[in-house]
Image: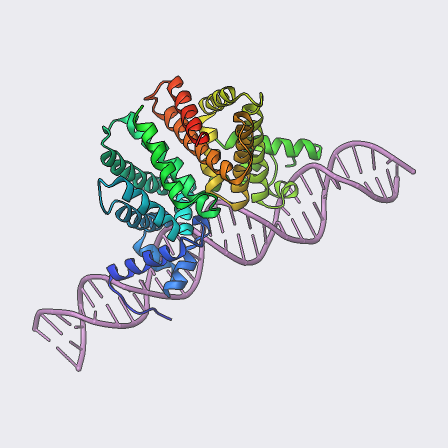
Length: 182
Length: 182
DNA sequence: TACCTTGTTGAGCGTTGCTCAGCAAGCCGT
DNA sequence: ACGGCTTGCTGAGCAACGCTCAACAAGGTA
């Protein structure tokens, strides 16, 4: 049996789309090429025609996910409270996706870890600009660690909401202020 | 060729030891049973005699690593500043090991992620007790997120020491105080 | 010596990532 | 309409990996 013919761009987009659908429910090492090909109705070989290696494919999928996240959070640059709120909303909406992205990306191939790192640096950029801090290694590190705090807080909060949403937002803001006014 | 005969306990300990040596330099998915068996001078089959599955083996290795970390950090319970200092020292000394543990454990099999989670909860226990906070879900979450902050700060600091060691310790203490006096 | 426990092995199976030679569907120029 | 060209697409197959299983062999015990 032979699959319907598509343009190269179409097929690539379809495969990335399937990857995005699978990411929330499937850990990266368990996401097999067979499964993706089956869902797309194509042979394994064809996937390797578009992506030289499985890592390349995962790279494309996670990059797409990271772009969606960043463009959502950084939609209104300079508005720190809004960015924070949109970040929380994103995690609320796509919790499984987000956790899979963080955990999966960080633990898997180095190339995939880079995708997460770059996305995080973009969010750090946005934060530095929004709170008016200089872009030097020291302040980058401070904001990066603050983001680790906030990310963990929000993920934990969505799992077990022992705080109110406003408390989460307020706590994150307070800690950020504390760090930046030192 | 046949390997020297050992007692079951000896062999198990040897295999876990090899895993601990490999952890810093090898990511979990790349740590193959073949390699461990080769280093131990035994056949693959024998490893599966002691550990039913590869996940079981990784479990044993990461649990051993986590126990070493926790017993070091919690050596003097109740002494918050000392615990923090010992945590920083641990990451300074075993940076690659520690990062591999955090990253590798979190990204890999769910069972292995549990090992990291449990170790972290033990450190949270120690922190709650040391600063005299009640052990309820709310405060656990706060301390947990503070630990995410501190962990990221220390790991980032060892990679690029733009702060002094005392600044790192002070910053972590300040943020902890900020969180707990809310 | 015979036996039994138990540490140990080699052959082999299914799955997964990846390769390669070649089929076939559309689009030209004549 | 027909041959040729591009290009999307496939199937067979290889190597590496996790894992199984039947059987061998070393040491203690009767």
